[in-house]
Length: 99
View (cartoon, rainbow, N blue to C red):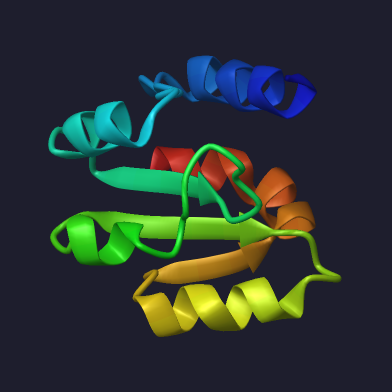
């Protein structure tokens, strides 16, 4: 929840609408309208590695804990456009959302 609050605050500061879908189905629906889909590769709600095949026209950014480099490899192999450590994501969030 803390991380979601930070993302929401930064999105508001840069004037970007952001959604936090609770199911894979709602994520796929919202992704049709999105320029960028940001995915926590540690998600327990759905398998984040099947998303690229289901959202092939959508730009996907995945973030992960820097100690879980296998998640990075899996995400790149699955088709994510960008995969970055959580620390880089947090540091560059305003720039990521503004682009």
